[in-house]
Image 1: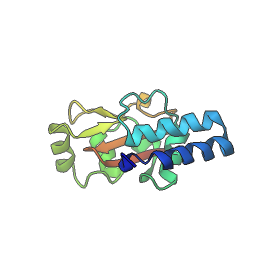
Image 2 (image 1 turned 120 degrees about the vertical axis):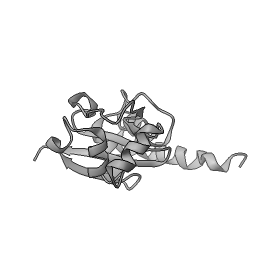
Image 3 (image 1 turned 180 degrees about the horizontal axis):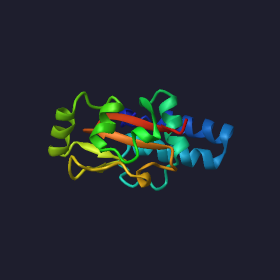
Image 4 (image 1 turned 90 degrees about the horizontal axis):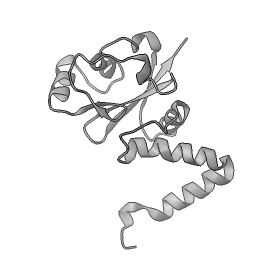
Length: 143
């Protein structure tokens, strides 16, 4: 009751249910993915692609399913537009210039940054963010 905004009871209940139903490993993976979205994690090495996609599928963040050839080797600003995070190249460039566009919680250094294969978490997903609260999980399809 001291800090209701932290939702300690909800977090404890969710952790207990996830651990009971899915096990300790799934709980850790879900917590890492959730922390990537809503916490302060800048290092996503503990996040698995399927878990990030599952967080999006649960309705916690929008998911944009894009063909891998629409993403790999393309400029990140183009991917941000295709994923629906930005409406135009101008908007994306302004975001980069002001330091507000992130790929996997890493701020983009320039508007010519390219999305490489190493940017796809487990070859399946990536996290694009605009500012502090606007996220899109990019799911790479190989169809």
